Every structure is written in structure tokens, then in C-alpha cells.
Picture 1 (cartoon, rainbow, N blue to C red):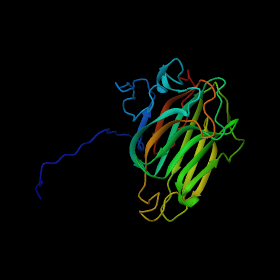
Picture 2: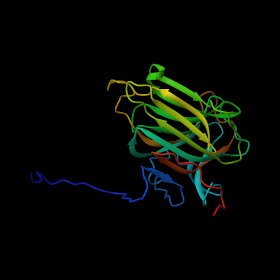
Picture 3: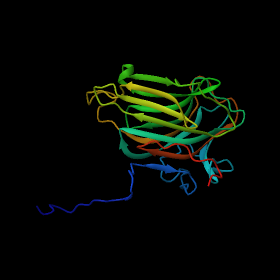
Length: 260
């Protein structure tokens, strides 16, 4: 049939390869990022508080710039920002993070990153828990917890306890379950070593009216500066994010600096 009315279609980001390409919807080392007139970072929604989260030089994992989170004394955090990508049932999020010398973690949780739908549930947040701080993943809200939130801890090998003053390579994988089946997964690698793996999970429900409906997909990467809920920031301190990548396949860490 002939075209019935004036209409449009767009194509972008073509690639041809001798191997599987996959979806690499987010890749940002912040070297070429621009700050808008509102203080947000072009390509990201946010930061929500540009005075406490912004591009900065001087401390970066690679290159010359990173995203700096400034935790002011008495604050509840350093804001947040997020970037959308094409919806995925399985997504890997790799980033590098460092905390300033003497950083005091909030015992109930200091926010790190998240993977979530554009709106609604399920949402998955990596955060540090306790003192000394350990990586934990929280799922909000999921069928497995009767539509409540559930924390997943490191369960492989010796748990890593974060030490301020150095960079960590962190990667989180979320695989949504087939609605009605317990085949979802959560995994996390720290400096390339698998430290958290929880297979056989139920995140999505069967009914479209469920809080996490069967059609939900992971559609945004989230940088979080949340500072728990029990105490306020006790002192001026910083954290830095660099080299964020989201992919449909495992990413891994960058080679050490100076590697040919």
C-alpha cells in the first residue's frame, strides 16, 4: 500500500563487525562531557544538585576529569543523576569509584549506582553498607519480597570492605526473570573478582498491574549520592565516579594505566 500520511523514521549508531556487537547504550569517561547553563551534564538527566555533584579535574581514574560528589557536613547526600538507554532484560553496569581519605560511610547505606526502568519498578541500587563499608545490592520492589525491598550481600569468597583513598572497579549485572519463573539473577564484581551472585530470583510479576509488571525493562543508569537515613553527613568529604559503561554483555575492568 502507499504511505498513508507524512511520517518519519530515524536510524543511528550503525556498526558492522566480525563478532557480536551487542547493545552498548552508555559509555562515558566524562572527558568530552559538557556542562549546560543549568549546571547539568549534557546527555544526563541531572545532577539534581549541581553544587554538590559536577564535573571536576584533579582526581580521575583515567584522563583528566571525573564526576565529583561533594558531601557537605549536615547534608543528606550529594544528589543524583541518570542516563536513559534502550530497554534491556539483562544489563551490566561497570564504573570506577573512589572515596576521599577519611571518608565516613553512613552505617545504613551510602548510595553508589542503580539500574532501573524509566519509571516504576523493579529498581536495583548498589550501595555501601555498614562500617567498614561493604557492597550490597538492594532490589525495590520485587515479587520475591512480597513487593517489598530486599538486600543482597556479598556471598562469594571473602567480602571486600572498601577503603577510602583508592579507585575500585565495580560491575553489577541484573538479569530480569521470565515472568512466572524464578530465573532472574544479580551479580557483582569488585576489581574483576565475582563477589556477589544470587541466581534463581523473581523480580517481575505476572500481572500488568503488579508493582514490577512483566513488561518492565532496565532503561536507565543512575549515579547516586544518597547518604543513608539514620545520620547526616558528619564532615566535608568527597567521592568520585569515572568510566561508566552499561552493556548487554560483560564489560570487565580497564587494563592498568601504562599497559600497551
